[in-house]
Image (cartoon, rainbow over all chains, first blue to last red):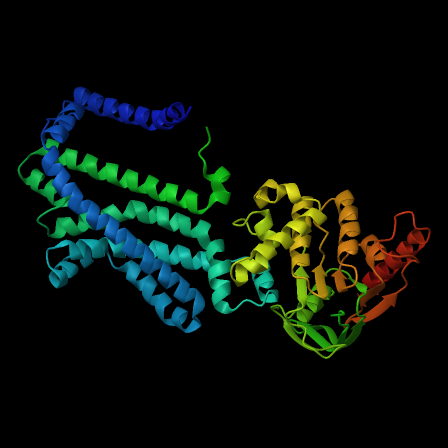
Length: 258
Length: 247
């Protein structure tokens, strides 16, 4: 029965959630931490419900930033990976630059983007893009480069062009490696957007958290955090599902054991 | 079109600064099976890769002619020790892999792939994924993919060495029957395989190496295991290969 299968899939995460809330409450009861430091799970749930309109508004903004950044970052990263695999001259110049770009702390970049692009959605989307660009580009390029020689031999005897070889042989062969990059990207994209919002914004969950913090609305702050975590988890599973559909031959190995 | 014979006029291969062979010459007759034997590291696989114009890490040089004067490119099929099935196509897709990779397979391609799968006895596996197949079945799919090329020259690099002995004997029969009438070169390190399949046996021998021709048993290939000449020829072949090691 499909209902029962769904329930079985949901049972474990739900159990984990309940356990987490129980531990949280236990810590509160045992240590007696004041509620302006750590609110109770019940208070956070209450804030979630009470401020649902406010949360929904800011969540929508952050969601747009994350999803746009994710799509942009994946497209850009993938294009870079393909171009690097295709053109030797590009590898020599771009590869060192790419590595250097990884040494720049994202937090240091945020104010500069803010300065250039203003306080709107632009810099946040760009932050999300920047943070996921590298894992996608590097795992994609690694995957493309590590095509087994035997398949390239076949491509050669079939008389394929370099372009056909790249798109028909190397790209599908790189999918499993690329998939791990995409999963990393899915969990990193919200970080980029929120950093952008912390540095300077007038809407979004990151902004809401800072604002609530300043007003000592700690329960609202935690409620915003819960929404953000839910986003990240949904995004991860969304990407994971999409990857399974794109790689049906891997269905057995990627299905979690029962 | 009748298959061409191949004439290697000058083949050289250097491994580091050690010449494996220099100015090597060989003839592979049109429509016949030649088995190329030699110890590991003798350069026999490299020679085959050179003929297929595949990438080689070592310094090499080859002058190759065909008996009909036309270029070899486009009428050559390659089969390796690994089955090289791609996991992202089903079994039938792997058979018509060249059609997939060059563009989009047509209905005719699909028909032909099905017929070949039937010939190798795997038509009921057509829509399975490669990882659902056994090693022997995978190699049979690889054979069907090689046949799909319908090439007049087939180069095989230890094509049956990764399967168990019984499967190997079955594959010999199948390949010999289905690839009949083409110019085939098989690199192998299995003397029995060579004696069952070859019209002609060549051993790559010495340093730098030369090609030595060895006698094959009477009878049409694939020769049966109870061929009366087989044990004697096998003993000769093994002795020859041993001698090379101690020379």
